[in-house]
Length: 328
Image 1 (cartoon, rainbow, N blue to C red):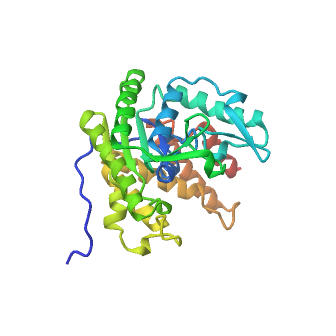
Image 2 (cartoon, rainbow, N blue to C red):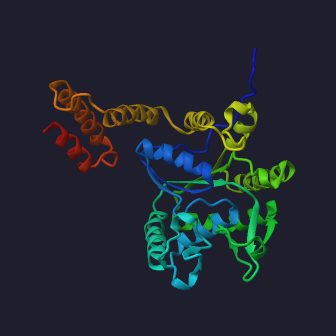
Image 3 (cartoon, rainbow, N blue to C red):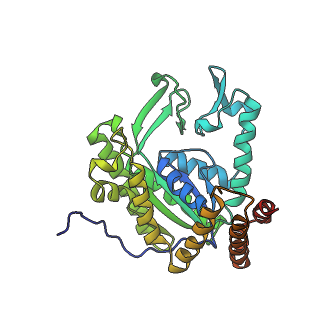
């Protein structure tokens, strides 16, 4: 008896592996994916502008990374003693304008350089609704709790999203011809919009991504995180207490489906080795000075050195030295 409707999807256009570097931009869900990849020692650059929700702001961030002109003091605004950027999440905000610019431009510089050699770009769209600053018409990535009357709220059409991205994608490939792009739609419902408006928003994003996939089938792919949440995990036990966000169990389930789809057998083998090493590194010994614990550390060290022979980027010399210091 089948008690669940499984979401099926085609063989991916490409896979993820330890050989490539990964740039991830978008909503909270891409943060979940990014943290999982980081924990497994994949080389990742996660949300260099902070969490971004709408396709227009994500596109603007990528265009800025392609041409990383530094932000100036005039690009910031101050509210209640805190400096903010309309292009960035509040994690970049600071009581010091100088510190705010330093954080923003530091990430812009390193991520802009990285964009030219990353192998995989993972994008998560959260909503088709955008907020435009009435004074300038600028689509903001974050309102930073300014009064609602400062903005005009509209919903992008699928055509507007498609037109923006079908121009952007060739520019990305001109800069980085080997880049592969994976789109997802966040499984988090924007319930404040209402049930119907949320569905219209998500449908807009899905239609736009489908059109982009049809235009660039060899270089793009789509992972159905939203569909998995809505169909495979439709029971409320898979939701957090707010009944909106996926629970930790749901995030883990979607991550496993993601890995099953995008990791080759070779990558899964390396993942198992990394997981074993990471468990050992996080182990808290009862008796750190005992011969048994020193043998345990030696075994861990040998595993790290073995995996470094093929993939030296997984564990640095400092990682090795850290383990050795615990053996003294």
